[in-house]
Image (tube, rainbow, N blue to C red):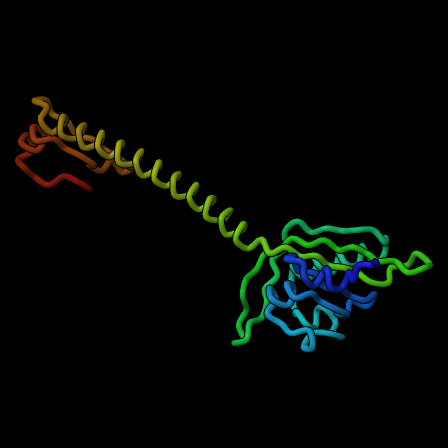
Length: 197
């Protein structure tokens, strides 16, 4: 018995699409059609980049990987690629993928077809970003706590200086303006407002 590999791949829970040497879509399994929200009739025969328009870094990554497979006849992988998919409403859903491109060679050893196996890692990427955001949040909380501690110490120091029996004034800036003057100092100068002068 020879297995029907088309049927086997179609039953796979993993997304697969088969491209010809010109990167036109020859076939896709049910899972690929499900994750890309497409029908086979809609994308069959179209160039991959026509069926799933892309630009920028994601286009360069995917194109470079596919070109390496065509040039070398060897498997190429992309660990992490953002590739947004147009939805039925005309907007785009953001997805992150991991992709493996496997060449299928003809009888002369030339690349005839490319089998793309993609894994949607969007949830993993979202978790990674949440973890990073949590790290930023924790660092911000630590800075805020240090600021609150320093502010508390400054308030206590001001209270001590305010009650000191001696004359205490603090001058700041190059212009020697008053930043602080305690009760004894203010009494000495007749209760005048000195801050900023």
